[in-house]
Length: 127
Image (cartoon, rainbow, N blue to C red; front, side, top):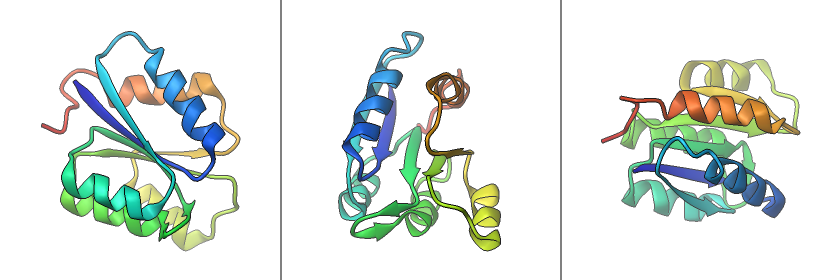
């Protein structure tokens, strides 16, 4: 079973991504959603995820710092960074070097489906 973590402070994003990913029928998956950095840290410190959708701007934390932490404790976790804000050059470079993919908000769901299918393809498990 593939484990997916979604971290975003917008309930609609959490719901929409969860529903979209659940409806992909090609892989058994478990999806966990959290809406702040504190809960995200608790999750990544106790569970290895195959895929993480991570907003850059989250309450009680920073998405870039959280991306670094995930890469440290679980380097095989594929991280998809998301934001609706413009990125400075330093942040853009860090995402290019450490994330599996970047998705600007608002995103389109067919693009999300492609990213998930690619990230969770055979032999791409954290275990």
